[in-house]
Image 1 (cartoon, rainbow, N blue to C red):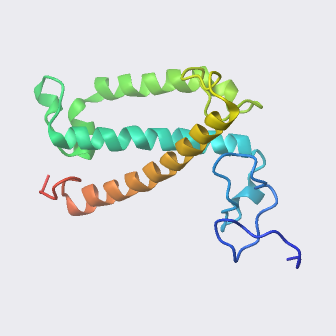
Image 2: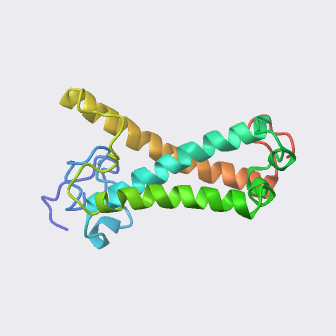
Length: 172
């Protein structure tokens, strides 16, 4: 460690990793495990972070809707435990979900390894926004994605270990 090393904005007592130069939204020099030293392509890592965050945002909404009793018609859709509901839908229902995910992944596969903007899948255009507005929205998305990943972990623990609803605390 050099005496002139730049310190992290997130943890001022740690040295900022070399690859985390602040060029990506949400980059505050936070990498206590040194993962940026292992990862060769930070664009790919940001794609993965955004994708997982978006999935967790949808998962949290889905878990709350499922527990609230808002369902499609049919007896197989009445389960209030989000994790037990996966087995109630059956093989055909789960294969439809798997196929839809596969189509989205294949359609975006080439974007993950390019020089494009991480997270840009071609709709929800930021092109009409000023650079400052677009940067603000990208920062908000990565913050929400990170929060959703933490929320999903907490919701999973609460549901799987304690078998209580996310809102209200009643048993599932």
